[in-house]
View (cartoon, rainbow, N blue to C red):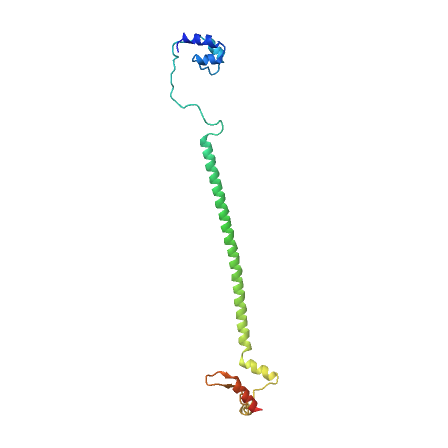
Length: 181
């Protein structure tokens, strides 16, 4: 819009009206009210603007930098990992110690059983010595049987009968028992 068109638009809508300044092409200033901006003289020439390359405005929050947050996260992960490794190591060490104690107790039980077994073998060999048994029997008034007793022992006939297959026969055994009486 030209400078001559602006006053006409202001006159139609009113000088203090914000709608008039928008209709005239003025969009307002950043830190200046619309009424003050409309009172400023119009410039026909374009203002000189120069572009300076570089980083734009900081968008990050005013708190910690992104690098510090990443470093804090990495440190937290490292500490948690070290704590887990330490817990696992302590658990394995305690399990190994418990296993070693149990092994030691079992070894002591085995040694005790071996000692008792050896003592029992010695006692059994002493007790089963034929000369000791003969001496103990004589001291109790016992003697070996003479040959006359062994020759005259007669056992009655067995009443249990087996059949041809080698199985016990109940009916034949009852018949043999009845005949013997």
